[in-house]
Amino acid sequence: MRRAVCPGSFDPITNGHLDIIARASELYDVVHVAVMINKSKQGLFTVDERIELIRQVTGRFGNIEVESHHGLLVDFCKDRGIPAIVKGLRAVSDFDYELQMAQMNNGLSGVETLFIPTNPTYSFLSSSLVKEVAAWGGDVSHLLPDVVQEALVERLGEK
Ligand code: PNS
Figure 1 (tube, helix red, strand yellow):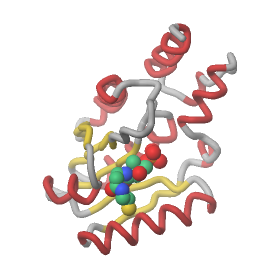
Figure 2 (spheres, rainbow, N blue to C red):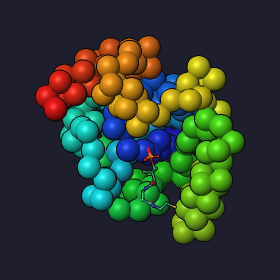
Figure 3 (spheres, helix red, strand yellow):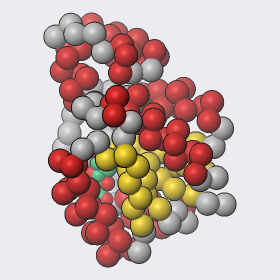
Figure 4 (tube, protein in one colour):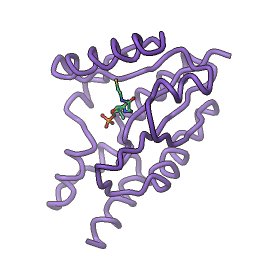
């Protein structure tokens, strides 16, 4: 079984993430989506809510496993026999930090990182930007799966 992981905060998953996961799912037998827990960051959605949304929007691919992880990504990979991390690269500005992480992860455990160029439609897209625009009443429905858009509107309405 050829396995890869798509890691991230996914707070919440966007069409940009989904595009990368979909493309990775064509290349690998199993794609693990790892919702990485960062205790110093207060999320808009709980980790369980993020996992549930990801499961709903990736279920149709048929080869996606969604889990959370608290700790190093390389340990997540080691525990599951995953040799490859797949990341989307939106623009050159992503590259510096992504390269550092890729080199660190490879040095720590030998895991490889593969970059997929983001669909240009989503090159400006991030979860934080979507949340900010939506919080001010902007329309982000074209940037999110329907179920995520509904969850976002509902969550922002509670605040
Ligand atoms: O969606 P994000 O927040 O940009 O994703 C960043 C993430 C979670 C993939 C990255 O911070 C990460 O891999 N964190 C896990 C902890 C870890 O392994 N840190 C060392 C990276 S070299």
